[in-house]
Amino acid sequence: MKISSVISFLFLVLLRWGHHQSHIEGPSKMVLVPGNDEIESFYMDQYELTIAEFAEFVEATGYVTEAEKLGGTMRLKGGTNWEIIEGKAWNRHTLLDENGIEETLDKIPEFRNHPVMHLAPSDVQAYANWVNKRIPTLQEWMHAVKAGQKDYQYAYPGGNDLRKLGWYEGNTDSWFPMDVGTKIPNELGIYDLVGNAAEVVLLEKGSQEFQVRGGTFFSSKMFLEPERKAPIGAVWNRPLDMIGIRLVKDVQ
Image (tube, rainbow, N blue to C red; front, side, top):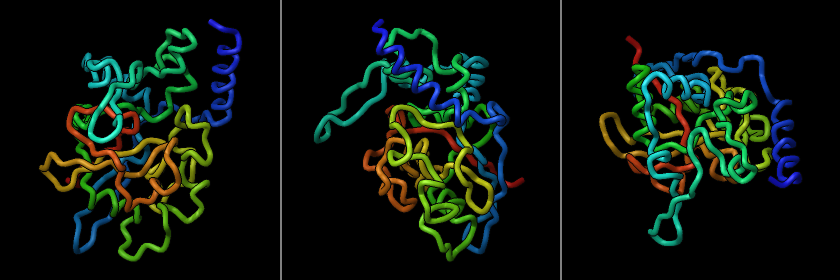
C-alpha cells in the first residue's frame, strides 16, 4: 500500500471526526407527521437509517444485499446499458479497497453513523419488513418535506439555505456521506430529507413502482429540489449507490 494513499484516507477520516456526533448509534426515532383532508397522519423516521443500524439487521438475519450478490452497485453506461461498479456495497467503499483496508465500514467508528447506502428497493423492503414499517409513498414523502403544510414557503425542507439544510456536492468532498442529523431539520424535526442519502418512495401504496427522491451528498444542487425525481429509475432488485433508507409507519 502506498504511504500517500494511506495518508489520504486518514485525512478523510479526520475530516469526519469533526462531524462525529454524540448521538451516534442512537435508536431510530419516529416523528408524527400530521395529516389533513387529503392525507392521513403517519409516523416517519426522524433520521435516515445508519450503517450501524443496518448492521444490526444483517447480524440478526444474515441478510445479503443485492449489491453483495452482484459484487457491486449498478450504473448506466450510456443509453440503456447497465454496468456493475465493483466493490461497492452497504459496508464497503472503493477507497477502502484501493488502500488495502480490510475493515468494513460498520466496524470503523467514524463511519457507523453515516446513512446506509448502495441498496436496491428490495433491500429497503426487507429491512422494512424486519422492523414492521413500510416504504413511504411519494405523497407522504412530499407531505413530510413540507412539514404537513399545504402552502409551504420554503424551497427545501426547513428553509432556503441549502448549505445549512443538507449535504450535497457543494459542502462535501463527494467521497463519503456525513453523519445523519448534523444539518438543520425541518419544522417537524426530521433531518436530511434532502441530501446525504437519497430515499426510495412508492408512487402509491401497494404498488411496485418506485422513485428516488431527495438527492445525495454527491448530487448537484438541482437534484436536492424535493419535486425533482432522480434521473435514474429505481427497479426492485437493482442496487444503486444513491439509495438509503427512511421508513414510515401507520398511526394505530
